[in-house]
Image (cartoon, rainbow, N blue to C red; front, side, top):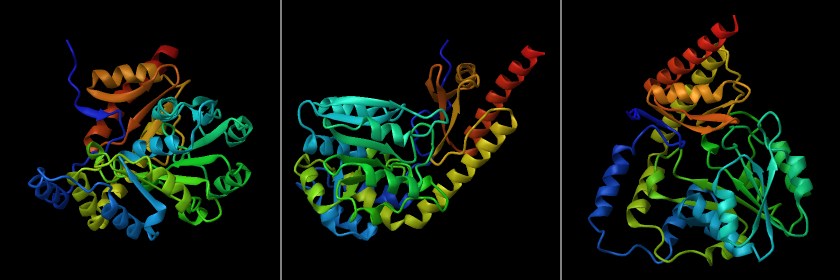
Length: 339
């Protein structure tokens, strides 16, 4: 008999539905569903740019950050080019590279689960058109610090575009965070991706954006699908930006639960490195395969990389307590079997 899924913790979704004010804006937009949205999302682009304190010519909006990444690949990649990225990471990178006609070049992570910046630089050659950094990293939650990122960018040749995926940046804390907008003037080959799917809880509506130099953004916009951002999504994003304070408090709650979840798992004997996304990462040689079996039995859906690790989205307190109970049982069984 199939075990019902009680807690969806596999896709790094927000545990919270849209705010009431956001739902009201969406409902008003639905009443106009017989009308086309803007041919290109110029109004939304201007709104996001003002929110980011950037000029509109530095912002490209697309169908989720994945959509903007594809537009970038289509804009800069030529046949026989390569796209370099750390692996394991977000599954879409190799798929998007292949869609654009490029050859994916995965570079192994460091043993601690961080992106090996030196190895990524070594992998760059005259075929490389794009190098991808995911910061905070998915799935391990590790962080490339401001100093590390600046040093990396200085060493990347200007003809190679650096795609900096910051889908989880709202969940990162600390003094070492990169000031990405400040890097744009010095590095016109840099594009930073952001999304409204994670911290803003609009995953189903598919809105993301990239910030970069005007020349690079103009090339990306040429690949934009007409009518590609629907009116309901536009209304939801605009309302979310107006409710930024409420959403920030939600993010703070997720961060507090992430730290509680990590601390409790460490106290149970799991080795969990500090993370900066809305998830925690359990890695081999800890018993991650047994862990996912226990979670499934408890009705928790998690992201399992067999033999490698287990990524757990931070849910609400009830979901996180269910996780802790299930994984405590795995550790207790493992300890008993060794005595």
